[in-house]
Length: 171
Image (cartoon, rainbow, N blue to C red; front, side, top):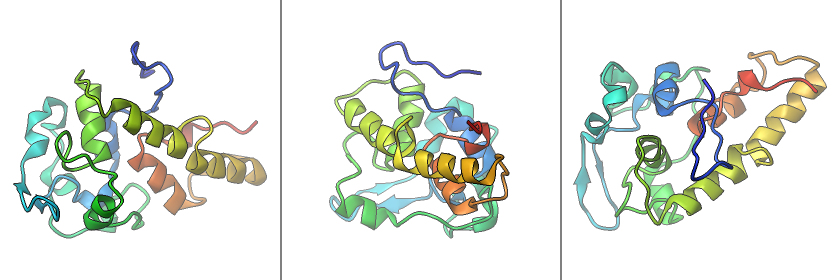
């Protein structure tokens, strides 16, 4: 299934939010209960507003402790929620959990003032000229084939950005 957004055709993740969680991302902790270091507000159960996540087991969504074995590539990647907040990557008024929550909402049809910023972040990471995607593609070309066993940390990072690197072609 090709993902296409008529109002933002340059935003082209190659997996849906549901597929991201089915594959295994964020060590199963993405929608755990969190407390904002800025507003001190507690957030929980945000995953329940997305019907497409209803059949995803809770251990892939709300675990308190990161479990790398939940991740598709069985590796730990990423930084902390507090780090994301310190970098102002999260606009709490829209999506207090961050980019993946934004993508879930965007995929569901919601549009906000934060869309362009989030899409630009995606472009810089996993878009056609994105640094993670280009690094992965370069490694695949050097390898001569797209072997899913190479560079699991980079592949896992791309999954967190809605991009399955197994779909990249050797050119």
